[in-house]
Image (cartoon, rainbow, N blue to C red):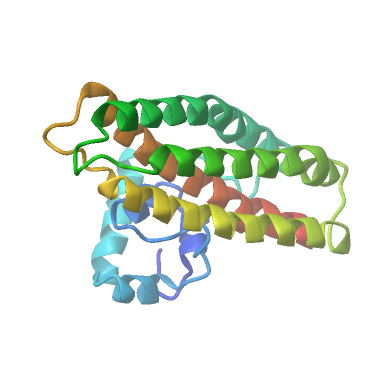
Length: 220
């Protein structure tokens, strides 16, 4: 049973299919996972009960993995496979597509000027972040370290997650909410679709770390 006084992070952890509903309604379940569902819905002008009904309906049609009771090394392996590796493949392709769109369509008012540069900045920050996790935090968690031993690197990673969340808002703004204009070419449309996928996958990635992996690692 889902209650409106549960946090977005709690709901997303116990009901993984809820992330699709949260994404659909632009509810921040990753960096803003500490918000109560009812409060988040009220701020967004949504009926909490309607959102809960959507989550329950989504859960009947989509089988999704729960990670709150699985071994932490398995969760780390999943994060590396499903999020870290794809980011390293997808971001360079998105940057190249953005550069192409800006180069070809720069004279059009609808052109997302500055998007390629911002994407390159985001990619560099994400790569540094992934390396810190892979070289420092994840090995410590695999070794069974917990509590004060991982508290500081977890805190740093969560602060950087906040930066990633802010960057996603900037990308969405530069790309006009990922809605291509009528004159958009195939590359332009593929770019916006790819950015929307990047946003949803990065939010799910951050959720799994902020709301599942990190709390469990700290508590031991």
